[in-house]
Every structure is written in C-alpha cells, then in structure tokens.
Image (tube, rainbow, N blue to C red; front, top):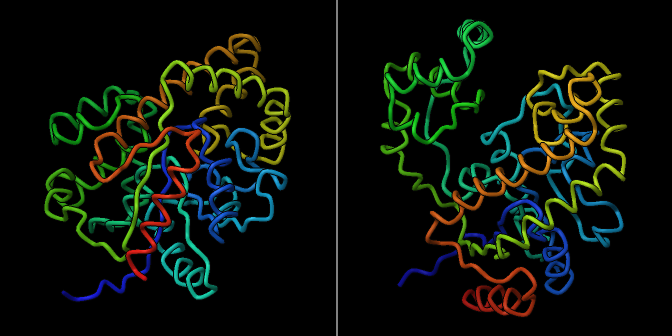
Length: 311
C-alpha cells in the first residue's frame, strides 16, 4: 500500500454560536496548533462585532489566519480563499504545528478540501446588466428565470440569495451550460489534503438560546456603533458584507425603518434561519463526525488518533 504523504488538516465545522471559537482554541493549545478561519465574513477588516470575530483575549495567544484580509468593498470568494490557504497549510506544517481549519462557511471548506469546478470569470458588463434586472424586477423574478434555465440549481438556491442567483445565471448564460451539470462533472474530486472533519453538535433549543443571547451581547458590545462607523467611512449598505446578518439589521435601524427592538428580533430570527441552513449543509456530508460541543476529550482523542495514523 502506498503511503499517503498528503498534508494533514483537521476541520472543525458547525453552525453559528455552536462554540467553535472556544473549542478550537482549547484544542490548538493542547495540540500545538494554529487556526485557519473558514468564515466568509471574518475576512473583512473593521467588521468585528457583527461577525463574532475572536478577540485577543479569546485567541489566548493561538495564531489565527484568514482574519482581516480585505476591506468591505473588496472582492473575496471561495477561490481566493483556497488560493490563500493552500500555501498556508504547508507553512504551518513546516513550523511543526497542527492545522485546524475552523468555521461555518461550507463552500469555503469544500473549495479547500475538494477543489472548485472550472467556470468563467465574472463578466462585469454582463453582471451590471443582471444587476439592473435585479433592481427592476427583484430577486424572486431572477430566481424564477433561473428555475426555467437550470431547475437543479434553482432548487439549491434560496429565492432571496441574490449573489448566488446572479452567479448561477451568469455561468449559465456565458457558457450555455447548466451550472448544476458543471458541478456534477467536476464532482469535487480534488483532495490535496488528508483531513478529518468534525462537527459540533448542539441541541436545537440550546443553539437558539445561544443565538438569542449572543445577539444581545453584540448590541451591548457596540454593533450599532460599528455599523455606523462603517457607513461613515463610505461603505455602501448595498455591499455584500454590509448586507450580511447583523449589519443589514443595524442599517435599517439607523435609517429609521425599524425600531431597535424590531432590529434585534429580526436579527435573532435571521440568525436562527442561517444556523438551520448551515446545519442542513453539514449534515448532508457523510464525512463529518458529530460530537457534542462540550465534549472536549472526545474531540482531542479523535484528533490524536488521526495524527497517530501517520506516525
């Protein structure tokens, strides 16, 4: 049998508010590890409270990577994420440390572990045309158009997910091929790493309680002020990161559209919905081993056994 010499990484995934930050820091301290974030919002500078970015105290001296790498008006996607992380994993291994990839952005994790299917780069003129259509007719109309062209993709994309609807239409119309067919052909078979995937299990009722509690803590920590500062710096509320959970709620509060109580209630509701979508994504993955979020010893034993395989 040929020895598998691929670099080894540990993936710790789970929904928002499941306790990934605390657990991963404890594991990194026990194992001599470094943490690579797999969170599509924590890459943005100046967006700390609303993204639940770990504080200096929470990091406890553990090196964290892929935080604060771009400004809110800069583009960042799964392909860029993968390009940054691939050499980083090698650097961590060269230092003799363990690599823990931690986050809840399923697409980032899949792109890193299994590659990305080839598709055309964004066409600015074409994208502007689709954006105009979006402004005039709304996301539901574009989703209906996608459903007629590529029903499989439409079923996977929520009617309100403007970014993914636009990209699916763009790929379809530029290549004259369905995005779903391109996905099936690629099959995400590129596996540059030997990896262990673990998911944090939290009972639904407890997870929702944590989400509601964290929403209040974000307000207490200055989420309103952080959003106001970003707007004063000239970042448009239409930017993708400014449309994310937390910031879009505070924008509507600051604009007088919602009361603070309405903004908090809607923030809690939308975060719960987001957590549910994350769980749906990860539970479809048979490679994920689910462990109770508080069971540190089980996580540690699983990781130690994974590395002993290579010894």
